[in-house]
Structures are given as C-alpha cells and as structure tokens.
Amino acid sequence: MTDSTATTDGTAVIRLTAAETAAKIASGELTAVEVTEAHLARIEAVDEKVHAFLHVDREGALAQARAVDAKRAAGEKLGPLAGVPLALKDIFTTEGVPTTVGSKILEGWLPPYDATVTKRLKDAGVVILGKTNMDEFAMGSSTENSAYGPTGNPWDLTRIPGGSGGGSSAAIASFQAPLAIGTDTGGSIRQPAAVTGTVGVKPTYGGVSRYGMVAFSSSLDQGGPCARTVLDAALLHEVMAGHDPLDSTSVDAPVPPVVEAARNGSVTGMRIGIVKQFRGDGYQAGVLQRFDEAVEVLRGLGAEVVEVDCPSFDLALSAYYLIAPSECSSNLARFDAMRYGLRVGDDGTHSAEDVTALSREAGFGDEVKRRIMLGTYALSSGYYDAYYGSAQKVRTLITRDFEAAFGQVDVLISPTTPTTAFPIGERADDPMAMYLADLCTIPANLAGNAAMSLPCGLAPEDGLPVGLQIIAPAMKDDRLYQVGAAVEAAFVEKWGHQLIEEAPSL
Amino acid sequence: MPGITREEVAHLARLARLELKDEELDHFAGQLDDIIGAVARVSEVADQDVPPTSHPLPLTNVMRADEVRPSLTPEQALSGAPAQEQQRFKVPQILGED
Image (tube, rainbow over all chains, first blue to last red; front, side, top):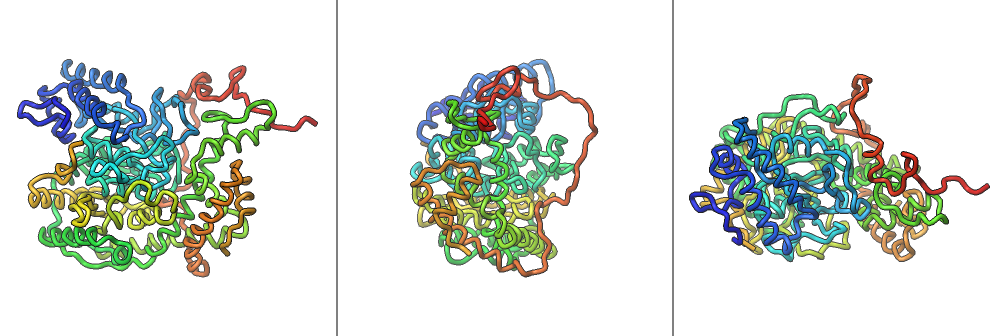
C-alpha cells in the first residue's frame, strides 16, 4: 500500500468499506476531507498504471467533502453515505465537469446539467472523485473500445477489467474509491464486477433514473451500484434508486428494501435455480469449478438448489445483438454536430449533411460504427421482420422462461461470465468473440429483471476472480442482497477475508 | 440472407450518416457479415405466433401537467454548440445554391 493515512487501529483509510467510512465520519474519527485526500493520493499513486479515471475532479471532491464536514460541525444529521468517495462512470452528466462517454465525439463537452443519479449522489453528501473510463457509448465488454485508451485489471494489468464499466470496477478493485457507479445494458456492471472480484448490481429496469445517462439502448440501459461488499452496494443502491418524474420509464413504486436485506443475509428454506443453459462449451473449467462450489455453499446454508430449463436463453445473445444496435442506431442519431459535440468539415464547402457525416466518421470508433450500421441494417425494409421483429419475439419468449422459472424458484444463479479476465488485445478485433462475454448476463436485461454479480473465488488455472450471478424477478432486488449477503458471509468465513484482499497492492 | 457486400456497407453508412473511408468498407463488410450470420438464428421464431416485446415495462403515455418549470437558460443550452449566432445554433448550409 502506498497510502499512509490510517485510522486509529492502523487500517489504511482506503481499505475501509463505504459503511465503515461513513460511520467513522459520522462519529468524528475521520473527516470527509481526510478520507477524500487519502483517495486522491491513492489515485495519484496508482492510476497512471490502472487508468481507471478519465477525469479527476480534485477541487469538486474536496469542496463536497468540506461541505459534509461543515454540516456535521453544525450538528446536522448526515446520510448513510455522507463523505464517502465514489467513482462515477463517464456516462452520467455532471454539470461543468467533462462527460465524454469514452468517445471523441464528446471530447471537451461540459454538460450544463446534472443527471438525476449525479444529483442524488450530491444531495446524499457522496464525494464524486471523478469520471471513469468505459467502452465508447458503453458498447463493449473490455473497456478497450474507449477512445482514451484501455484500463488495466488491478489483478493483472495486462488483462481487461471487463466492460463497458471497466473504469468503475478497476477503481474500486484498486482501492481508488470504495464505491462506483456503472450502467448495465447487456452486462456492463456485472461482467466487470466478476472479472475484478467486486460486487455489481443491475437493478430492475426502471429502478434507477436514466435522466442524464447518455442513451445507448433505452429499453435495456440501467444504472446501478458497484462496490467491494454486498452491504456497500445496497447502501449505494438505496441512494440512487427511486421514481424520477424526469424519466418516463422510471418505476413509480417504493425502492425494494435492499439495505435491510443486505443486513439480514439468509437462504434458509429458499429455492434456488441453476440455469441449465449456462454451462458447456466455452466455459472455463475454473469458472465452473468455483460456480459448483458456490452451489454447495448455498446448499450448506439451507437452500434447496434445483436445475431450471430456460430454452429461449439460447437465443438471447442473438436477439440482444439485434435489439441493442437497432436502438443505438436511433439514439446516436442525435450526434449530428449541430448542437454540441465534435464538428468537422465546416469550412464553407460542405453542406450540413456532409458535416454531420464527416463529424460522425471522425468522432465515433469502430465498435460504435459497427453497431450503428448493424442496427440500420436490422431496421431496414425487407429485413425488419426477419431480424428486429424476430428479436422482439425472442424477448417475449425469454420473459416467459423467466416467469416459468420464478414460478418454481426464488432466484436463479449462473456464472456471471464464461471466462476470467482475458488479455488486453485478445478479442479486440473479433466482435463475435467479444460478445460472448455477455452470454449469461443478457437475458436479465431483455426481461428487465434485477441481477447481481459477486465474487465466488479465484479460478485455479489463472488465479483470477470468478463471479457468481444471482437473478431475481423484477422489483425483487432485495432478494439479490439477501442471497448475496449470505453467500458473501459464508465465503468470508471460509477464506478468512474478502476476496479483494488478495488483489495485488500495485 | 447474409452475404453483406462492400456496396451494402456503403449504402448503410450513407443511411447512418457515416462518411466511411475505403479501407473501412472492406473491414466492416467482413465483420458485419460474421455478426449477421451469427445473430440470424433469431429468425427461427419468425413463424411463431408470439407477440413482440419492445420494452420490459408495460407503460404507455406517461403524462405530466403542462406547467412552466425551470429549465436551461439560452446560454446554458448553447454552451456546447460548435458555432452560435444571435442566441441560435449556427449550422452549415442546408439547402443548395439554386
């Protein structure tokens, strides 16, 4: 550890959980400014190697920390995460602070408004340290598609940290922040969590506002919490979630009791289903071994584990790679070089339409261009019924499979992703190989369910983290935390510590 | 159905307002062909009598009261504009000379 700031018992501040940090700030053992400075020093020391952040907002973070300390000094009651630092995925708008979505097309843009998630974090006294790296427009599973260069996995800097939210997962796995926020369209919170040995949750679709979250595929995109423990994820979930009149797809219902569930982990008497389809060729042996051990842990804790058949899941990946590109081709039409963002070729010889096409060519990277064209193809006349129309039918069939499964079991489980972190560059120009990373995570996006990934050990063959995925019915997000907390406690007892403690100190 | 040609990629790029370079046309043609070949499996269900799902939530017409509320000022709205004039977005020529 390069960090020297320690608590009274000698623990480095940066290694505390968010819950512990908040408690120490509330009790006066630490100030929010001390906590923020410790994390800024850690970023300074290691982020040159990791490249988790695209922008560090040093002044903004310290100003927010000072405000929290002033509130406490004035005797005001602090929220459960007041003064806790957080790394925010660069897809959420932040007023006056750069927001690039990992794309050159938004380089230098300073949004004139805060996303609802940003605003809720600020209102809760959370200290936003900066903006994290990501695959451009959240399209990717490795963060290699960022226009600003890749992020390293803190367990092995030559490997990918997952994607699209690789900056967020790497930031918490390298103790640059105890909390982060991601967005999950096909697995972009859960797969990075799995390959970095951290916890990531995709809330029920509509559970967290999308206002100010740059749109990729609007019927799938969902923001959610990233943390090193299940309880920390729950505390952040509660701060982010809830109805927002500014997002017409936001669910107008109470937030599921996720924190209470995380504090009362238990699977006794629960029925848990293993998705039969998520096994077989393409799954790394060590991933399956750790998954099978997690199943035994669940059985040991008193759960009844059964196999569940979800036959339509075999078509989920194909349906996703038609639906998501179709929606993206429409959503990204707004980048027309007229109102904000990059403009190229405005030299008096080109028409507005030419300038739009030249700017998009210069501003978008390969994966974004591929998906825009794929979506344009899938939606074009003559192909619409066979591709987009069929994909929408598959979506119905997948939802029905989930409904049938949840008639038999309380939650479903699977490996989060078929392999551990692969080397940077290995799949960079092979789109289909890259897409397979999302095989197990996509069905929950298509149906709108809640899902979590949490660590279940290191694969014996490469010593890299493996993730366990838990899927719950829509608006039953609390079940993820109830099961996740029980599994986490059992593993901590077995290992003697959280898995992340085994990560290299950098 | 698959078999995406260079010409088709050029057509898609025009529809999508992407001024692709020549070498990109070849590169993307092969890749798009691979992807479409793989995802074409969904057409297995094309003949099934299944209603389509476009969205996970059964929401329609979420309305709010038509009230004046605080919003961005003209200065804020124009703050990211590549070019502006007289409190408006300034754009390149849209219509031809004649």
